[in-house]
Length: 405
Image 1: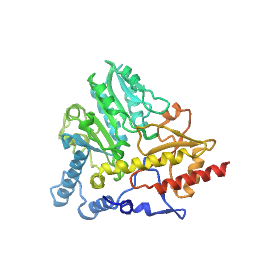
Image 2: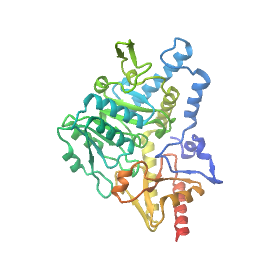
Image 3: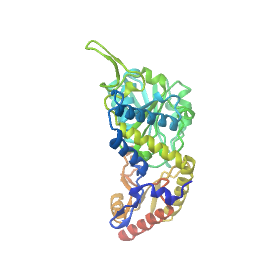
Image 4: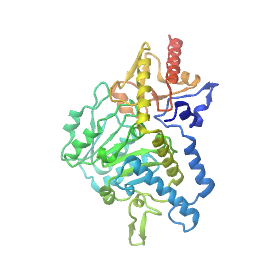
C-alpha cells in the first residue's frame, strides 16, 4: 500500500499554497481533487485520439469508442452491476435523478401516487420529484429524522402503502455525513414490490458499493465526487426497468430508425445517451475508479475512519462548538457551528489561513430547517487528508473563537 506521502504526491493541487499558507482541503463533499493519472487520461484523449464515438468508421473514432466502452465496463465492475449495459453515462448525479424522474414519471406515475424521500436529501433528490409530482398529480412523502439526524425507520415503514411507487433516498447525507440504512430501506420497499433509487453522490467515495448486494433498482453518482472529472456521472438501473422506461432526451445515437412518421429507439445503454456524450470525462472517470481500486477501498475506509475519529475527538474539545449529526453510522464529514459566530464569518477567516471548508446549507435546506439553523460549517475529509491537517483546522477554529470573544 502507498504511504500517505505517496498518495498526496499523486494529487498536484494538494501542493498548492493559498495566501502563502499550505492548502488544507476539507471540501471533498463538494468535489474531490484529481490524481495526476486522471488528468493524464483526459489529456491523452485530446492529445492522441480525440474523435466522436460510435459513429465513425475511421481509426480515431474506433479508439475513442473503445476507450469509452471500456470505461463503462470499469464502472460496471466497480459497482458490480449484472451487465455493463445497465450503466448509463450522464452529466452527473443531478442529471441522473432528473432523467429518472422524467422517465419513471412518464411510464409509471399517475395522479394520487406517492414518492418517498427523506429529510436528509440533497436538493437534487427533492426538487426533480417535486416537479414530477406537480406534473403527474402525485404526492411527495418524507421520512422524518431523530435529533441526531438518523432517519426514523419505524416512521418510514408506516409511509409504505399501495400508493407508493418509488422510494428515493441518499446513501450518505452530504450535509451531516450520516450513513442511511439503505439495505433495510430497500428490503422493506421490495417486500411491497416498490423499486428504490439510491443517491450515491457521497456514498460512492466513502464506501464499497455493490448494487447487487445492496439490491437497489437504481443507483446514481458523479465522477467528480470520486476523484474523476466534472460533467460526467452514472445512472445505473436494472435492465428490466431501463427496457421499459422511455428515453428522456432525443437525438443522435439513441435512435434505431428515424422517419417523420415514427422513430424507434436504440438498445441499452444507448437509448439513454442522446447526442455527443462527455466521452473524455467518462474515460477520465474510469481511470479514477481504477486508481481508487489500486489504493484499495478497504484501505480508504480505514484511513477515513481514523480521520473521522480523530477529528471528532479534537473538534469536540473546542468550547461552544455544536456538532450536528452525531452518529456511529457516519463517514468523514463533520457539520458544526461555533456559538454566536456566523458560519460565513468563520469560513472566510479559515480561508485566509489556507483552510478550505464549506459553509451554508449544503443544498440541503430541509434538514437545516429541521434543526432550526440557517447553515453549518462542513469539514469533509477523504483518504488524502491527514491528522496534521485536522490539527490545523482546530487551531484555526480556536483563532476564530479568540477573534470573536
